[in-house]
Image (cartoon, rainbow, N blue to C red):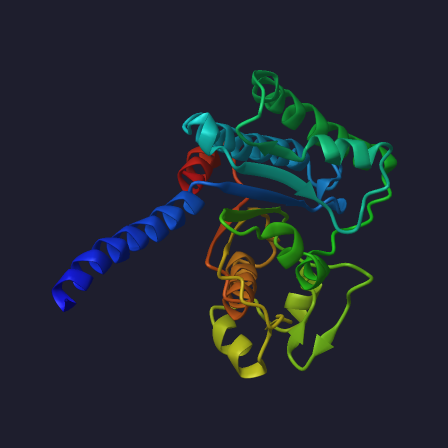
Length: 281
């Protein structure tokens, strides 16, 4: 009796185990990519010539990796999406329409026209957004810290997906609506702030540890989120600025249990393209 029952249950248990493993594997093949764009004065051509064009090419690299991924799947298995976020919303005409067009969702009902259209949309719309922000010249800044506080869990993490957040920023964090300090922790860093903390020598790590310096983190468990920070552009006045910036972001992401992250310094898009492709692949 026991032997017969075991013979019945064992195949069922094995089948269930394989089914769960198959579902987990499938979830890894569903991409959910989100962009968070920093439209602060970092993109001002007079202040930082060429930066906004590099941003556009970085976006193109990510979009290309997304399309290569989608094209490698069977139509029936398509469950992939990509979207763009800002915080705060830039003062740009038709920003809602431009953003809506950048929200792409590939599923078994996706038409060939949608496949052909994504390259055009992700080339034209980001360029319009950046150029409008530059023309307006009223840079509203980028509140990355508040986006994490209020939106990252809601907007960037979807079940049964590999969730990737791509942040285009110079690595500094500042917005007039989010200036907070709790002990050594802060919601912002600027070149002036880092200089005031004397983080301009090889001993920056011991100074940070002694004074408990870092970004104010949130009690989140972002174990389902991967993050790529693109375009870190440290001040040339401090040879340790890049290391300090990356330490701030590293400690912040670890405190929020981010699954995986890459911090990439501003470089020629041709140099970073294969790196981006490999990360997403």
